[in-house]
Structures are given as structure tokens and as C-alpha cells.
Image 1 (spheres, rainbow, N blue to C red):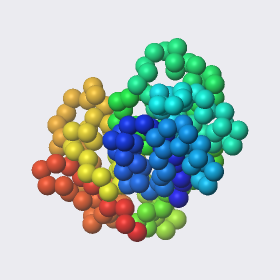
Image 2: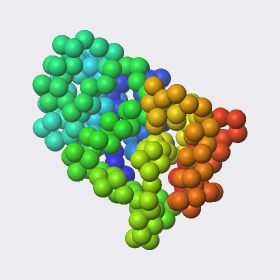
Image 3: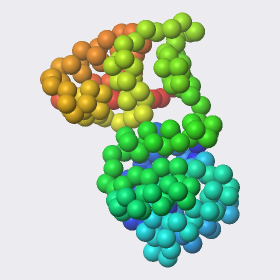
Length: 219
């Protein structure tokens, strides 16, 4: 299990981030100030830090060296959307810069991308008898390849990145087919049916009545 530290002074935002990360299988530690973060690091070694720029006792920039010295990747989470702040953060060594408000799905995708770059997250996911190889974009069952279309594979990744979370048909349509896709949510239903059959996940991809779908991630 990868461990993350969330350094965010707003408890509601911090708790929401923690909830989404824990649902995705991450271990979390929270800190609400720069001082708390430094104390936490005395007995907690994270695989990645989510760092707000505007902390009550210091700028997030001031903590960046502490993390980079320990080779801990850092993603800035901030309400500052000025290009100058983003450029400064990235030039100082941040691995990514995300402006609030943001979608939980985007945050999880960014975290996974950074962890993979550092070799701290395997590109292989095993769930429900399947092996999903992210770099190869390959799915195997018992070593035998499962042939998926591009959209079926993207739908599978979306479900994997949001395990145990109910996703509406509209949200799935938006994230897999894009904002410009003109179609009805029936498209989602058809692809879910095909994915269930190909993966043998009829009982794992649950229908959420009058809403959408949820991938059950219990082994």
C-alpha cells in the first residue's frame, strides 16, 4: 500500500481527499500546517506528498526542499491559478500542480502517474482474477489476453481508479467519451454489458439503480 501525506489547512477538504484516497487503496496521514507536517515526517515516510501552498504558518514552497531531499514526490494542491505560481512551483521541483477545485478522479490519475514515474506504483493491477498491465494497455486472465476495444479499456481504467465508488452514467460518458461526444447514456450501458461479459465480472460491476455503476473491489 502506497502512503501519502495530505498537508491542507482546511479540514473539510483534507477529509474529502483522505476519503477518496483510502477508497482507492492508499494509506494517508493528515497535517494541517507546516509545523504539523514536519512533526509527522519524524515517524512517517510517505511515498508522495499533497501540499497546499497557503498554510497558516508558512508557504508550501518552504516544505518542498524537505520532501525533495528525501526523494518524496510532491503535488501542489492550491487555489492559486496564476501561471506565475504554477511555473514557480514546477521550477522549484514540484512534480505536478493542481488548482482547486478539482475532481477526485483527476487527482487520483495524477497521483498514479507521479508514483509510476518514481517506480513506487506497479504498472500491474490484479483484481478479480484479472491482471491489468497499465503500460502495455493489456488485460489478461490466467495469462490469456482479453481483447478489449479502446473505449472498453478506458472504461475499465475509470472503474479501477474509482473502486467502490458509484459513478453516474453522465460522469462516465463525460470522462470516457469526452465533453464533445454526442450520444445518450445508453452507450454506457452497452459498453458495461460487453465489459462484464469479456471480463467475467457480471457480479463485480454493480448497477446502481437509476444512477450508474460501481466496481466492487473486494478480492
